Amino acid sequence: MTTSNHIIAAGLAAALALTSALPAAAQTASAPLKDAQGKEIGAANLMQTPRGVLINLSVKGLPPGEHAFHVHAVGKCEPPFTSAGGHFNPDQKKHGLMSADGAHAGDMPNLHIPQSGDLAVEVLNAAVTLEKGKPNSLLDADGSALVIHADTDDYKTDPTGDAGGRIACGVVQ
Image 1 (spheres, rainbow, N blue to C red):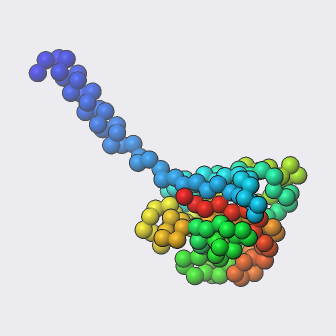
Image 2: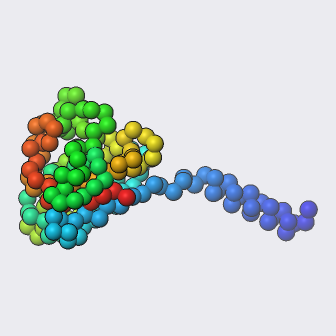
Image 3: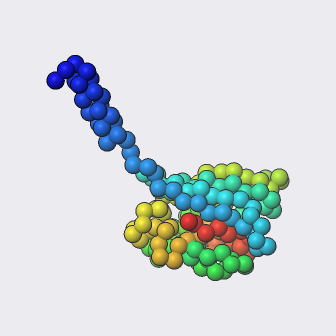
């Protein structure tokens, strides 16, 4: 083998070793959020991480204040968004981030919308996955939806957190 062939072979071996060491592309999904009038008010980009699903949420024009933010069990967003079903809860747990029995997989911290009505935030949900075929997958047969509620989640009232009506909804796709 000539010197140039050794260099080419070594380069190919290094390239193959490097590609096999790289992690697989992260699984992603998105959810455009609309209000009850059908106006797009924001979007969520979801990415699978080793610790759960990271949700990058950006919204505009929401009423200022504290609002509940949940994953709902059905990938349907027909106003008034009850079509999205209840909270995503594959393990049949009680509602509330502070529940002694655990929480719904769809329970997440309240959003704090500033006076401008615009918010960009990241939320990590360790109880869900984007991996198809898993019982806690947001991409199951009937899909799932992200819902922003009119009121705050009290983190204890089962099954809804007393969060009020649904003011925005986005199907995870």
